[in-house]
Length: 595
Image (cartoon, rainbow, N blue to C red):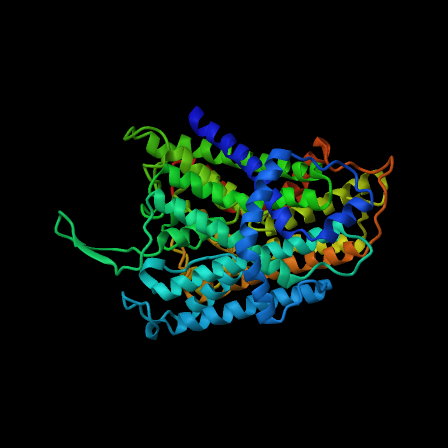
């Protein structure tokens, strides 16, 4: 390990904190309804709302400039679609509208992939995609997972890639809608409605996703990524070998891939491909894109409940978990494989599966980020990580992707842990638990626990089935504990809507295409729809004033309790499986055996 490699971890968290304030402040201006904020303040929510006049003025100026261009477009969409943006929705109606949007997106993508060979914008004459891969891909890009059981540049036409980009806008936007519905449950009181889905959807798309993606595309082009619709280039190398160089709208797809925490890249190698990640500056900018909105959601929540101290407490818990994981990954990757080190063939460190232009430090940081902000984009080969470094990536996903997480989804997952944390604190002192002035009763606890049960149930059941039946075993290319780790990783990635993979697994086989698809559906809807119901229940409650016995939820004590809840409740259930996978592989490696 080097001090530069350690320093960049803390620098990234510093940037994330700045992004939380800047992006969160902007999101508050464009997404929070007047009633959301007024209801939180008028009921005496404890805690100050910090203001930075110069920064707030700068953010407001940016919004005013965009208003002139975007507001006419927004109003035109409402008129054409017959939408009344001021009509409030109950949580059931809100959830139904969200599911309808996702269903339409899934159907269009599934049909387009099936008809790819007969459609235009196919200069490489890509053939029809197999049924199971088409089904898996349509589910993947609808649920913000972007798991790819194929190599994008060798499988998809430009038209197919373009529609994947459309889904990379729509799926993260619905994640923000989920977040807004749950956040309003805490900020509102004595009401049965959670806002208007169509307004939230349109405004998130027009004010956040589209401008952010355009800015990201321009910067990535400047940093060296290509952006064109040219046919693939065929060349002969100096060794006389014929090679096909894939190109296309790389910058634009990479921009929304990273900004939207999608991860499904133009290239199979994602940021490890020189066109997608040409240099370290590009890699850093992609990390900034990935952290922007998840960090902003944290501050947005604090503004909506009129107490930004709550937001910074949650940010601190996420940051501590992130830094701890990043340091562990970097430490084990820098130490390398003891068997190879003993041969004295090269310097220490695990360089297998890494780009030399990024190095071990940046690659380790990027891979830890891959499974915390839930984008699944990679700059190195996860399958080549040392066993305990791979365990950290598994842990990040098995928590339910709540360490920053994707657009909105990570934040509401952490709010579910917060509800359970105050419930546990209430049990310890014998008081009815409260969180942000709302009594936490049986329904809220049940919905939170249901959301937490989904990852463990889906991952363990599907992984156990896969390692005992023929179709599952046939798709595992590596023996022993490493093969188990690959299976666990596949289903953790699916249910966490992450999208990254360990490799060494036939993800395109009917068994894994179908079962990972099931994991993606359950991880998106069975986990988060109950939390929308939780928001509906909380919004209907009266606000109760804080008393002498109220457990403060903005202190270091609560931060520690929240971290403990995530680790013990969310991840400890997986310890037996992890002991048979990466932990057993690490022990075997030190005993001189590799898998």
